[in-house]
Image 1 (tube, one colour):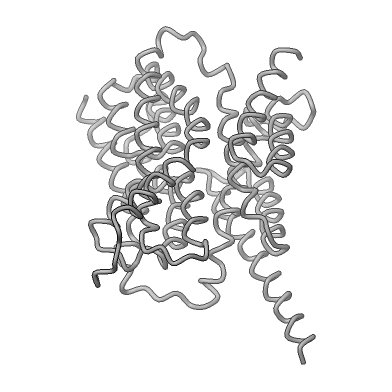
Image 2 (cartoon, chains in turn purple, brown):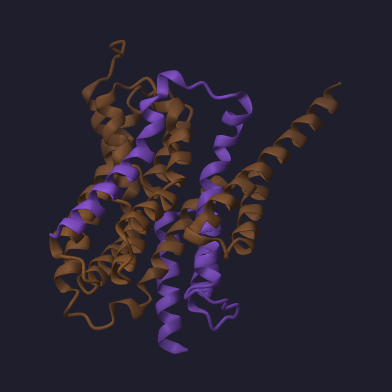
Length: 106
Length: 245
């Protein structure tokens, strides 16, 4: 490992752990305003959606809005599977299967 | 911390439940880990540094971006800054978990913070929100954390070892595992109209902020979604109040 790599790793570890730990570390000194604690339940679906949608509609960085896009087809089928089955494993497995079937046959 | 009664059986039960409920997400992370290893093997990053990154940074998307930047010979300071921005969403996660973990001693808070990922967060928050008085819900998060961690180390290592032997691992499209897994994680949260509005707004915003650098669009879109959800909730409550009067 070069010195440059060691510096990069040290920096990445410091910022990543720092972000994850900051609020936990200060927990005793933090009191959330009511509107802030109201907003907490929106955080997970908001963040996860903002990561997911572009990954599906622009899988390689360019818009690909058609059924020829295997990422989009996989996402639509796993969404349907998830709503119907309410089962995480089924959602993921059907999405993956749809993706590879699409790549194989189209 | 007051000595709350924590029967060992319950601890073990929570720990194992956390691991079990995380199993599907391990499948989703598998190809992601393999590709990370395979790409790292050809990025110019040393074997030791690629392993150390998985072991000590333990943050999938920023690891991917970092090896991409290494391959493009980006200065260290830029790589660290990019990592900071890409991982800022974890602060939103820790804010959400704060009410449930703030009574725990630092020897719990430190490892749970280190192991905080999208997956463990999404699974654990459902456990914390369930209406039962188990005093050991943090053991559930610990089980989920350790399952995710060991799984990630294993597949990253295999990807690194096999990386040079698998031609074009990146072109297989295994990266589809991420959106498909995340869709499975989003669905259980969408139980009310305000949350549905939040998701629609965050999704629309994510497509309008694509031009923003360093994935900052994710954060901006998340805030837009949260604001929409909050407003919808206010309106719904105001309506209930109006009907009552």
